Length: 311
Image (tube, rainbow, N blue to C red; front, side, top):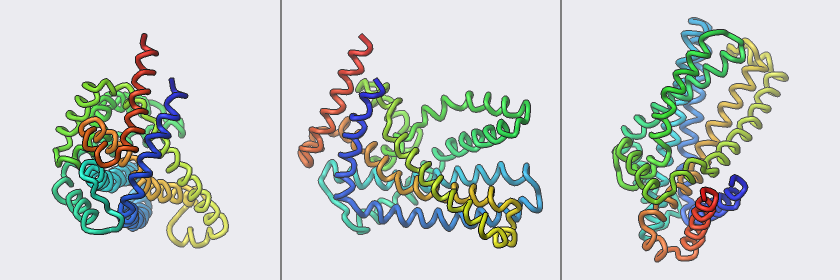
């Protein structure tokens, strides 16, 4: 079943890339959001070093992790909501945003104002979840007893909530301006009614973008490691106590942050097209018949495969 998802995912991504070509203003907006993330990362690292020196590990690292993950989620989802608005208009009424023009500015403004509360609320759950997961992994690596087991139990408890408050909800926020909880409920009901819930739960497009972000993060981490090895005096004078490890870690976090923000445009485009196909198939086909047929055929074939595997 998993191998059949690869060509299915490839079709979804190819249709999304075609949509992005008509709306290149999305990447200009993504570059702006990534720049904000880069500046914020510099502030976090500087503040984190000073706080770590003064207050130690337990009063610094957990809060720094939470700040990183939550802000990362907020910046990414601001872009996701804006992308959903742009791609939704492209799908339903055929409007294009080839430059950073009025459409993109309006979409980003809505995401940063009217929908910002929903974005922060939804991102909060993922920020908490990822922070606990990060601390648990770190403590397991240090072989510290008891506490990792407690954190893993907490993760299992909130995993259901994180699953229900899914990433697809941000598409509804961008398309219709719903609150986050209402959007999550509507997307869950939509996929359940269409019979797509199992396909969505095992969707590979998001995983592919995550692996790409990890690859970029490892590349920048290698650069950070090299800087720590050859320019360790600068690292020491900047407050880093372990130049090689700290250089690797900071390089990874910066690379992963910026690449995941940029690639969220692709993921959001795929998700928006799927929602539009499910809710507005006629309008989608009128404006983009070839892409609509291609995407609809892929989902129909995937449904047939899923039913044949169940029978």
